[in-house]
Length: 67
Image: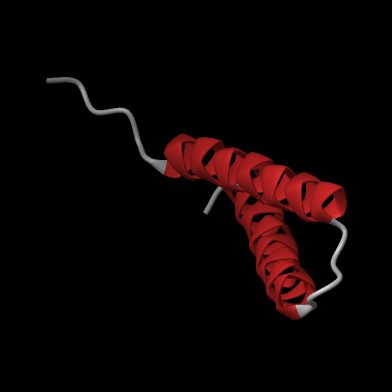
């Protein structure tokens, strides 16, 4: 594995952990009857941004194949 691929893999692990943590926080906040809706929306938006970043990094790991 090249050094660049190792860096991308490390970043992917960190982003996936952050994504999972946000998922837990969102679930916990959503269970609260008196939750702050604005905070919940911000967390959900941040989670989507992390998901997009993960997808971009995963696509970088796919080797380019000439057809």
